[in-house]
Length: 109
Image (cartoon, rainbow, N blue to C red):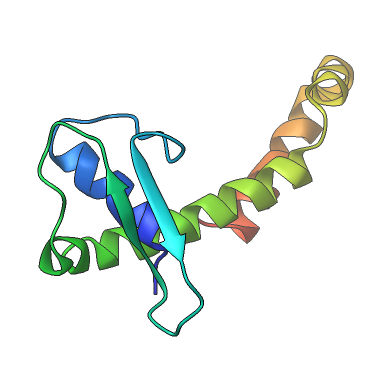
């Protein structure tokens, strides 16, 4: 199940809002009372999403979160950009093979 913040971002993008600041645009809260995280405050010029609006984003949000995990794994495996440039300079073909292996072992959805 995707995080509420991811579903809100996708809902906003679908409604013409490309950036969401979760410190001032949308404030989330978890009162630890078993209800989970909810929208405490909504300060955007689009309608606050209903539960159905957010549920409609679930599949896309799951995919986005899975791809974010893959991106992070790849970023760590790629290593420092300076080291990569040195590797490219020394042997670009070996670098290509290494990068392809990282991508093949960590596919996006």
